[in-house]
Length: 313
Image (tube, rainbow, N blue to C red; front, side, top):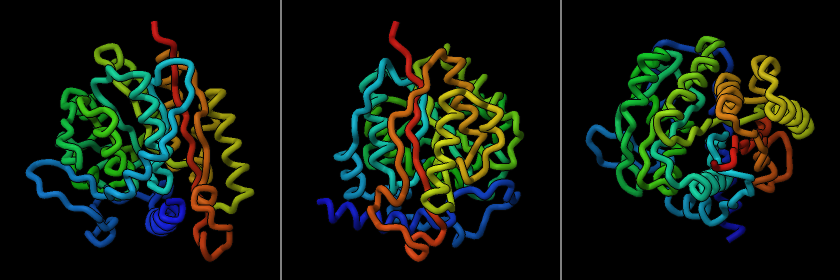
């Protein structure tokens, strides 16, 4: 089993660690050619729904089997998860923990990095998802507010193909089978104040329905191990201390979307939640492949599970 998992990780690393993060300020107003999008492994026959293009049954079963239930001091209200499936077991662990601490969740709201050129810097989709576990309904009330209050554009094609959202959806349906979802993808050309706007809207939504707010981001990119560790320590300190000024200056060396990360920190504060670090790793540790510049031609990618937790009343 361990050998099988290592083979999966090597394949996932090769597919997902090559150019799948947004480069800061690299933006186009047009959709890329079809060949520039990741190749979908699974295609579902559907009508007016989005597909989970990165789902593989055997791999997903391994993520679920390796998922750790993290220790928390209360219910999980929000958190950060990886969208590289190299770290799929970490994402599964977050959802497993959240489902145990907040099973009454009505909607899982996903705020994620926009990697590809899209119709606008902030996008969403009103369509339901066709998942391996059944149809996952979109929360159109929340999506309408993304559009009306945040200026998000409808761009269903990009939402479906961007792994920051599509790769996460099977975990949502598996762990929260009765919940709805709403996805918002935030690009590198979005206004720098979008973090504040997102967090304020999500805080209002939290007063109206029981939501789990998930921020789908990966952390340090393109660096060698020592530099990855150094930047991860900077990120850890900034997140745990709520240092928004430092977060707003971060580049891909720290996180692939400082806007999403800043929104998470702001929302946690607004919810009265304590930010806790539940897990941390990187592509080299997970794959167990020793570092060299051939195997890691674009450097490492690192992953954190941060969670905003609060004791139940």
